[in-house]
Length: 148
Image 1: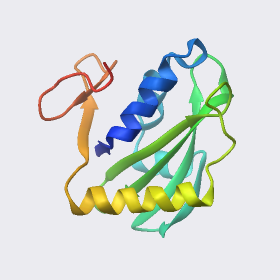
Image 2 (image 1 turned 90 degrees about the horizontal axis):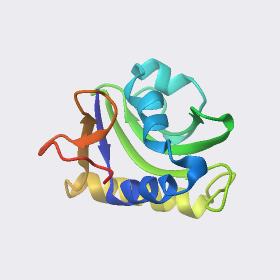
Image 3 (image 1 turned 60 degrees about the horizontal axis):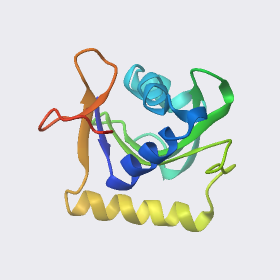
């Protein structure tokens, strides 16, 4: 499984992580995406927002907060290509706190679809993976921490 991100996504995670209530955002992402199999990612706590359901669904996923559970976790928006086992993380927001929202608007969903297509067509996504200790996201190309 390969995981790709946008700069906007990384920026959101960095901003969210600055809040004490969400300081474990990176770990929560690792547990919800990187330590799961594709079928678990696709089926547990997800809602399909568009795309082809069997090949390339656009999904919203509940990400539980390790320290406080589902109610104060996150909503993660991503595209999943099942045939290639690629995941494209597009946007995340907390469910509680200052930057919280229940869901994103239809206009924001459309914007994310447009962002996905633009990044895909212009090869703008960055691939990320786990470091050796599986505790941080790093860029696959240069092995630098993705969330500094």
